[in-house]
Each structure stands twice: as C-alpha cells, then as structure tokens.
Amino acid sequence: MLAYLCVLPLLVVARRADRLGSAKPSDLGDAFGAGVPRGLADASMSGVPSPQGLGYSGVILQRLCQHARTVLGVHRAWIAVRPPGVEDGYTGVAAAGTDSDLIGTRFSIPYEPGAAASAPVTVGATPRGALCVADAVNGGALKPLDFALLAELASLTGEVLTHHERRELASGDSQAEISALVRALGKADGATYRHSLEVAATARAVAERLGLADVDLVEVELGALLHDVGKLRLPPQILRKAGPLDAEERQLVRLHPEWGAEMVARVPGLEAVALIVRLHHERPDGSGYPHGLSEERIPIASRIVSACDAYGAMTRRRDYSEPLDVDAALEELELNAGTQFDPLVVEVLAGFAREPVAIAV
Image (cartoon, rainbow, N blue to C red; front, side):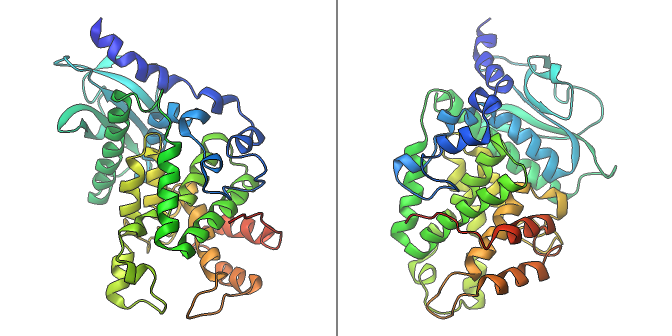
C-alpha cells in the first residue's frame, strides 16, 4: 500500500494535462501575459509563465516519452519507476506509441519481448526506474548516438522524479527561476537578452501559424526564450566581443546548447523544454550540433527556434556588421531551406515576416 501511495501522484500526473488539455491558444496567450499579442515581450515576473500554473508540469513525463520517439526514431517509448522501499518490479507512469493501459501496470524491465533498449533513471545516485524504447522506425538497431540520446532523456526523466519528490512540480512555482535566468542573461549581455525576447515572439507566431497549440506552444515559446542561456557560461570577453569570433572561440560557443539544457533542466517543469534548447542547432541535413540529428528526428519546436534564431541574428545590428534587411534575410533562409532549416518553418516565417511583431524591451 505504501508503494502505491508513492507512485500514485506520478500516475495522476501522467493521466492529466490540467488546464492545458482544454485550453485554447488564446487562453494560453492570456496565461503568458495580458497585452502581449505575440510571445514573451517582457522578462518581468508578470511576463514569464509558470509551468505549474499552466498545467504544463503535469505532462512532463508524457512529453519526454513523445520526444524519445522523435529523437530516437522509434515507434514506442515508456517510463517505469520503482517506488522507494520496493525491491523488484516497476510501475508504468508514462507511455507514447504503446498501450495506455501500461500506465499503472507493474512489470519487470523490459515489460515485454522486443524492447530495443532501456536506460536507468536515477534520483541522485539511486536507481529509481527506466526509460525504455522499442521498434525502430527504420527497422534497424539503435546506434551509439541513439544510446547517448537515450541516456540524456533518462537523465531528464531523473530530474522530473527529483523535482516530484521535492514537491516542486505540482505544488511549486518555477516562474521566479525562469525570470532569474532571463534577467541574468540581460545583465550579462543586453544584445543577447533582447535577441532572446525577439526570437520567443517570432517563434510563437510561427508555431501558431503552423497550428501548434497547448503543450507544443509552451515548449516553443519557453525553448525560444531560453535558447541562449547557456551563453552565461561563456567568458565575458567572448560573449560581448565586438568583432567576429576566431575558430577556438566558435568551438566554445558551440557548447552553449548543452550548457543551456543543463541549466534549464534544473528548473522544475522545464525538463522537456531543456531538450528543445539542447537541439536548437541541429540541422535537417544532419550537419548540426551537438548530435547531428536530421529531418524528422529533430523536434518541431527546435526546428522553429533554429530558423527564428537565425532570422533574428541576421536582422540584428552588431558592432562589426550592419543588419540584413528583411528580404535579404529571408532569401538566406530560403537558400538554406532543407539543409540548415526546416522548409515548412521557413515558408511560414517568410509569410508573416513583413508584419510587425510587438516587442517591448
């Protein structure tokens, strides 16, 4: 009975979407801040959403399962946990692409023949469960890269369980922590801060035109807002450098998606958003970083952030270069559609780029 009571809150989390399940996009816009027609235009407490307040924190495990299917290229994914004090057996708490009756069912790992792989989920140094995937879309075996990604997703799952046990998901409020990250970016480099606000506004507009809503819209906007927070770990002389970066400096900057993901994952309710941040420099042709994912294995939110990030960078004035005008920036995006950028995202971005976007800084 005690074990069941320990797992029950996770089962409730796995089966509900709270306000998000029934919210319309306009409702979510209100939750992100009244008077902001497109995106997060204010890094104040009132302008940054609370994952707990939106109900987004109630679907994190489910989102991680769905993202595991995408980035690993598999048909099925599920998460199972072992309550404290239980020696054997696991209970399913989330699943995607497989029988929903798995949630609440006790089984061993893997729970059925044919599981492609599983990675341990830990809380601190204590094993508490597993993230499992099965049935590769291409019918082949998982590659070393896939196992590395599986381990990363299992680590994010462990963050969820840690935050759950600290009661930071259901009853906490992460709004202050999100605001603190944004404000820290503003203090470190005002240009990067303003760029992040603009990318968040543009990314939300693109996502809405693509028909994304609810949890997808939350991940796009928060992922865009926080996509550059990893740059807080860069030396100030690189972050604020007035001229072009040299090769060694560029290599260091390339670490910012991973650094950012680590920082975002520590915020309760943003564990899945951390994955979006981590993958926002992946490219459809597989030449991106840090993992070299390609095409549909890159989450749509990361593909949106990637194009909006590039558009914002090209149209932003720098100390050492003039900004491109709208037409020139769009031409550059279209030239690289299908290789560096998602073609549909570029098409939608180009369709509204000449419309004004409300940004208050």
